[in-house]
Length: 389
Image (cartoon, rainbow, N blue to C red; front, top):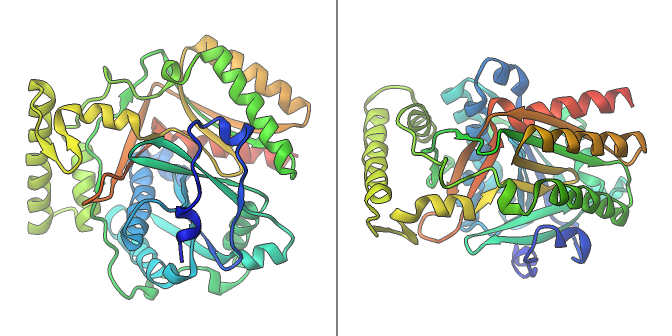
């Protein structure tokens, strides 16, 4: 069962994950699911970064709706998501992902690759996999993943080591359920000058050494940028409801169509809900929708924002000045020269949100990425460095 993860006690602070949290070994009868968009860099260069992020958000809500809750281990990476699955949910989730692959292709013309690797096989290959939990808000508990297993799982999936690991469209048994996926906010402008999408990969296989390297990076970010509130990429003053493109993408994602009666009715429903949300925010109307008080919607986005995470690499979206970013680059370049880490960075002037809400519960997460490619473009820089080394 998935009680293994539910019963783990979450840390109260993100940095404490790397300082004093005891990580737990993933059971060997679990599975690693990795999804990503093939050719995401090309799609982003064509200006389709919102489609790429939407596809990632759809896999998250599809899996959440199989679980029936959101207290399960996953990490969003911009153009894909990494999940850990218990054996009892393997086949329904495999079916949901198979249909998601089909829906992403039909709705956005993007090819999604997905693979499921047994943790037991990764352990047999000599790797390790650990996890911990962090309570980001009362509505969202975030997973962190450690060890050497994930890069090997990704390699096996990309290289097609075992055909049975790959998830195919024809494995669909039941349609994926995307209820709870929303995309109703404009890109969020930087309040301080720049939005930095950062990926840091420690160059060590020892878990404790990796944690110390990440702690050094987080300490520098705190000393340079300030406290979390000082570099948080979402600002209440900058968050605004969208009035077009994002709403249409939500309708496309929910219906799998760009036109037709079902699409138009869904888009109309989204517009009505959006208008009610806008009125509640503007006029401070305490209208309730589930656990939400609609006049406080912007606050919920900030509280449950998924803007820093760890899955073997530290991923962060940071709002700051050019001066701060240049200082961070100098610091990371020094650690890179010392052989402690490699990093990739991408700079934009705004961030974007993709939201996942578990209907009939108070669980939610708002995935944050840098606009124009964010994590995917930072990953491209990182991969080029790793090729050289």
